[in-house]
Image (tube, rainbow, N blue to C red):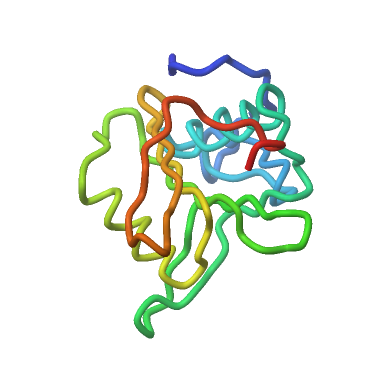
Length: 149
């Protein structure tokens, strides 16, 4: 799958039970290779290699409660003090990034209070900086480098 991201060599394998799988370095296991998972892995490697995000500060598929309901977010980047800095939502390339996607990530962020929200389907990627005092957010023209978070 061709994305609007640099392409990184990732470990793939074929299994009789699950078909194609990709090695997730963050969860330390092979997972089913879906279009969304391909976007997640390529985007997270982009953050590490191009934007200098420490792999050790990235959490994948973590659970949280939103309005009393268990939910799972796609990825989070923590600050060095273990507070959430960036909440990330991934979609398959065929899924357009629309208001519903931003509503989904915003609802997750009610619990986490991350300073930045990112959304990507591998073809389009968006990042916004939260302004909690002004109850608004500002879209950024680029994905910020880790050191500028």
